[in-house]
Length: 291
Image (cartoon, rainbow, N blue to C red):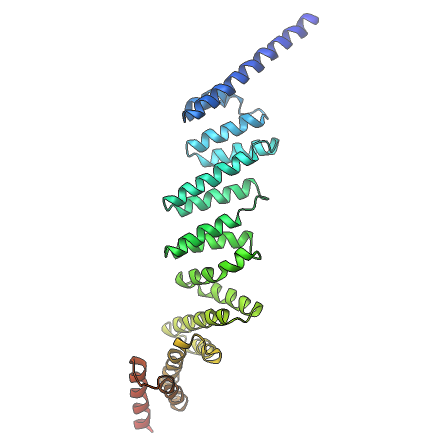
């Protein structure tokens, strides 16, 4: 019996010693970026609940750009212990930053998303806002919108989030996501009736009105154009809104209402210059000839 126990202990010591050697070998090959060779050293231990082995397996697959496998092994490691938590955070944040340097926004966002899945309590909204802001500054509005949408899912109340609302709204407008833009703009306006919030709300109202007008939904468009006129913002678009209302009523045969709005266009342009003035003058002449 004692001999058997001794034999078992010797076997376990040898096995343990071999495993440590394989782990060390794996680390050596990882440092040489030879991930395939590193995997050969430790892949046979993949079923073990060993925090380091699971982490190293994840590291190897990440190095091979096999991100689904990497995520699985990193999760296994974190489920066992948080020993490599900071290392995993660094792996994903550094990869995201590298992706941003070569303008691979979707890839960067995917890294951040995976990190959020692996470590839900890790605050990464600031990184996502940074990604979005960088794309916004470059005029990449679809890219900026992806970043803002993901960031606001995580954080919508911090000072960073508040400062990003305007760029978020502008990105929504540029990407023709006007319905969501209007919802957010109204919420911001109710929160704070600043001139900036009134201005952007007016811009969105105008753009929605214009879109509905082009689609032939004139009655619905009227509501949004009147909002622009009621708030007198943006001032540069008030005369445009008046003209569209004039056109809507003119096409409906409501010449009295149409005339009022065409005249407003003229009053808003005292120097009587510009295309809208000329069109309004022509319409006023037509209406007077009909009466």
